[in-house]
Length: 407
Image (cartoon, rainbow, N blue to C red; front, side):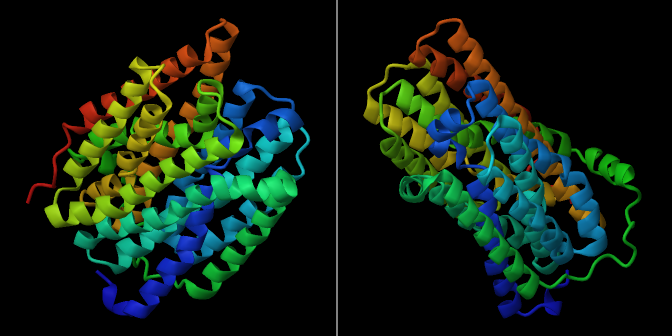
């Protein structure tokens, strides 16, 4: 490893600067549920289009993961992250001025593209400057700090929107994103790259080498479906569920979204250290997925659960459903150093692609069930059943992955 090339103070400074970008990334993927009423009114959209707005962010994010992996290995995280975050600034400005679905979707896609290298750039830096045994814990803490963005995209955002409107709120976020971009440009330094940027073969050869690892295919299956339901529920459907099925007003709904986000943050902050102490990232990630999936199943099979229990099940999903960084740390154990950038972005590509598909499909399915005349409890019971089954299926495939590479 190359830890000696960077002092502890430098590594901490990079962690802090990159965290500002990741907080914004989590904000942008989480805010839609808070402004659903405003967007439905001002853009004249329904559930299908609403789901597609969330999907636009994730599809653009996913589409950029493969080139991001190449650029990280060739050019390093500083140039890659700073250059692409400019797209997020432009997208936030465009979204704030949107008067139609397509303009808003274009803004969301630009934001998603601009956020694409933030997490992977940070993980690449950690992977190059920290010992492999520390990677899962450090990545989990970084994810937990980033999830503060999801907390901001709940009750605090609802309060700001009530004061200045959603359009001015997003002009403000464009300015904050620009400030984060400048901070990262000033603080981050690229770790040494491989002596030959194409070491490990072409992109296809690097991916095939990773897929040949006995642990990678089950991990990728898990990545496809295990976290998408949690992010989709938090970013899109917590608000509509508690509004339509339980009759809560926007501020109360945003407080539940905040509580779910707090649970996700605690999960991310604690899962990595627990996995590090136990030396078992697979088992921690698998247990979290099973518990979060069971929360969805409880909401599915008890659609008329009293409000306090529905809130508790929702918090349960968040409290156990943010072990993604631990799973990436598990995958990291199977990756040769020369394809690290491509390896972690492959896992993230599959994860974000699955989440984007889930966002789009969930909007289409909610629109379909409503068109069939189903009452709100039945609509969201079906949605939660779909989410729960996907998570439990992913956990089943993941259970076949080896816990560690063979010595």
